Image 1 (cartoon, helix red, strand yellow):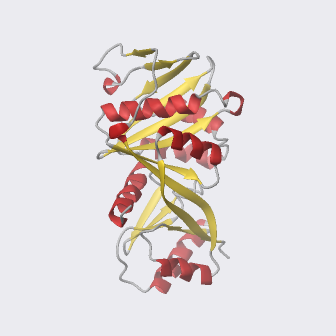
Image 2 (image 1 turned 180 degrees about the vertical axis):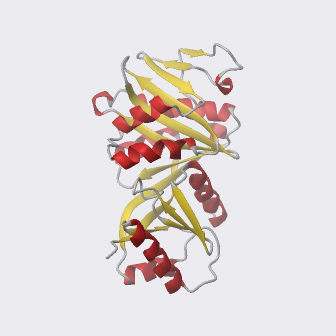
Length: 273
């Protein structure tokens, strides 16, 4: 993949997941969200620097020191290798490696569905309310990230920090792009989740979580298929997602859907004194 294509995906992912606070400093974005995910608590490069690197890194360290958190820098192929080496020499360690997978949607073959319910085409941005598959799997669909969906997502991904419970809903609601929100319930609560974010002609797949007691039931496959199929109907031609390096079950699922490894990124992190 070309650096221009990687730059595009990096921009899409920043649009898809806003931080609680963002400061622009000489073409660097200093992102802060009380340590809820590395991506929203790191420095990302969005343009060519003018100031000396030593000056900029020291400034970022002061910012995160004032926040009382480690200083994190995101390293992707669009970042000069010399910068990664500079951080390493200055005590920054690699944290949280992630693989980016992509797929062209022109040849995507969707799973067979038993029923697609659209009660009112003028409602829900034209999305169906439910998509039903074999084995009594029903995916509910919404065009809005609701408070209930966020609350139940917190249960799935084990979010308990009081500050996160307060600020993260606003981060979800600050997403500036069209969304496709998916869920599977067991009659009482959400046991599988997924979020599709449409930007330009791309569909980003996010928030794929499955309750441990409901794994190996093809819920993740049905959630992903629903997001991809509806994304195509909304005009998406490409799709991307991000998966933690070494998460082989998830990688195998995404490969079976047609995604292929594209590039990796990681974070250089150092505790503040």
